[in-house]
Every structure is written in structure tokens, then in C-alpha cells.
Length: 345
Ligand code: DAH
Image (cartoon, rainbow, N blue to C red; front, side, top):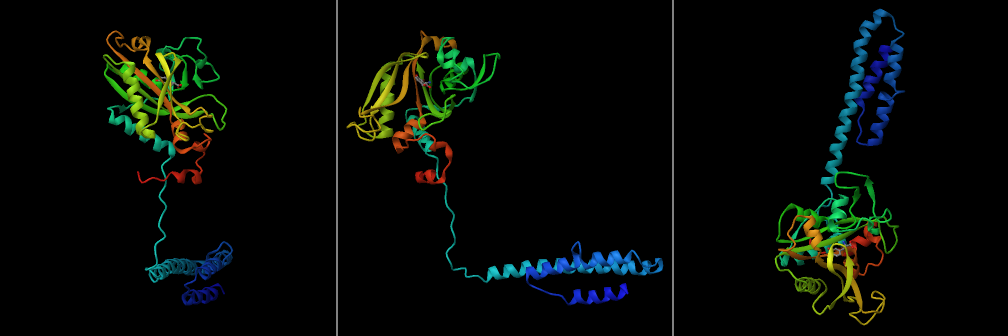
């Protein structure tokens, strides 16, 4: 009985052929599926007499192998048929092409800043985003009770440590300290990087943003050098004729300190929303490096002097591209990002 069935199905399998994937799948289910014919036959086989088992066992195994081999063969054969079809397609049709991505506007601005300072001989330096109190605050002459050390501004990670509490750096000025500790002047470097502050996210504030720090340290460096360097930078970045002005300010690590404004890049000084009708917009903080900072880093403040400056990359990008909402920079919305396509890769 069982032998007859096997003979009959063997004929069926041998005769079977298809090029269609769904028919092949039907075949698989019918013979090889969990409720398929082979499973049934093996179940029936359990009930046959011991003598029959001896002869039938081999036949049964061969039958199973035949079904599997047929299935495999047709499967591979079908794929081959598919690729023949692709080869037959009209190859003269235009290709689909692929879209080239865009540089992030902050990356574009950062690169432009680096290129401008490169021309003045500034190299690029980097430092860690996870900092200790010494590099982020103490070495930079922040008094113990300075509000910038407050929990409100700083993301603290760990209390205590060889060089004070561990925190996410709140500014790139920490890289200045690392640079000065690592050697002796002359130094001429810019230090781009990401910084973190404990701020609620809104259109005008974010818990992380980007800065570029600058440091120029040598013998006989004066405030005139600072002014000329930054003046040159602004002419290169926003075009000749951009005016600058310095307002006295305060930073613990510079003395004297200043903030630099430029004539509004949008209205050219006539007054608009961007400059709140003042004709000026602030772009950076700067000053002469405080002798205390030099001494903290084992640099002779009698022999060397220098200037430092720090600017927010988002702010510069904002003025260049008129991007008013800071959140756009970190949302990764492709519709926003792809506007800043550039030939530079
Ligand atoms: N670190 C300052 C900030 O985050 C920016 C700054 C101001 C950096 C003056 C400087 C500087 O190097 O001289 O607000």
C-alpha cells in the first residue's frame, strides 16, 4: 500500500516543473510542508511490520531526498530565469541615479572659519568634551563662587576627582588650558568643538552647541593684534566693508575683556529684526589672556602675552544663513539640511 503511494508520488515529482515562484511554493507545501505528504507517509511508516520496514525504509528516504532535490533545483533554476529577464530589459533607459547628501550648515561654517584662520597661521587643536573642574573653570581664573559653576549651567557627571568635579565642558576655553599645559609659546591655534549647558531647549537656547576658541600667545602680543586678527576674520567671512566694534566686557580668563559686534549682515546696518534695529550684532567674546591663567599653566606672564577669543558656531551660521531657530540644527530634518548643498565635499 505504502509502496504504491510512494511510486505514484515519485512519478508526480519527476513530472513536475514550473517557473513560477507561487507554484513552486505550492509544491513545497504539498510535499515538504509540516502537514505535507512526506510527513504523512512517515507517520504511516511507523505502523508497518518490522520486515516491511527494512525494505521500505530505504525507499522512503530516497523519496524524501528526491522531493527536496527537486525543490532546490527548481528554486535555483527560477532565480536563473529571473536574471535572464533582467538581462533582457531595455538597457538604454536612463539610470535612476542617486542623491548626494549635503554638508550640515554647522560643518560648512566651521570649515570656513578654520580656512580663514589657517591663512593667518592658526592650527586646529581639540580637547575632550568631558572635563574636570581645573580645565573648565579653575585654571581659567573662575572664582570659587562664580555662578557659571552652578548646577544650573553645568552638567556635572561626578563629584571629586584629582582635578575637581567631572563635568561636560561648558565652553571650548578648556582646550586653551590643555594646550598651554602641554608646551611653551608661541601658540597660534583655533579650537572648534561641542559644548554643553544645562538649559531648557527652545528656539534660542540648547543644551549643546558649538564654539570655536582662539588663542594667540607670544612675546609682545598686544590688543592691536587681537583687533586686526578679528577684523581680518570678519572681512573674509562676511565680506569687505563689514564694520566691527568692541565693547568692554568681563570674562574671568581675560583682562581686559571685550565683546565684538559687527554691522548687521542682513540689513548692513540700516536696522532690521535680526539686529533689533540697532544695526549691530554681537558675534564673539575676546580679550588679553589674564596673567593668572598663564601662571596656572606654567607660562611666564612677564615674558609672554596673548589674546583669546570664543564664538558660537550656531550664531555665525545664524547670521550667514538666517536660521532663526536653534533646534533646526539638531533635528536632522532632511528638508532643512538639503538646502545647504555645496560643491565642496
Ligand atoms: N568662553 C566664553 C563663553 O563660552 C567665550 C570666550 C570669551 C572665550 C572670551 C574666550 C574669550 O577665549 O577670550 O562664553
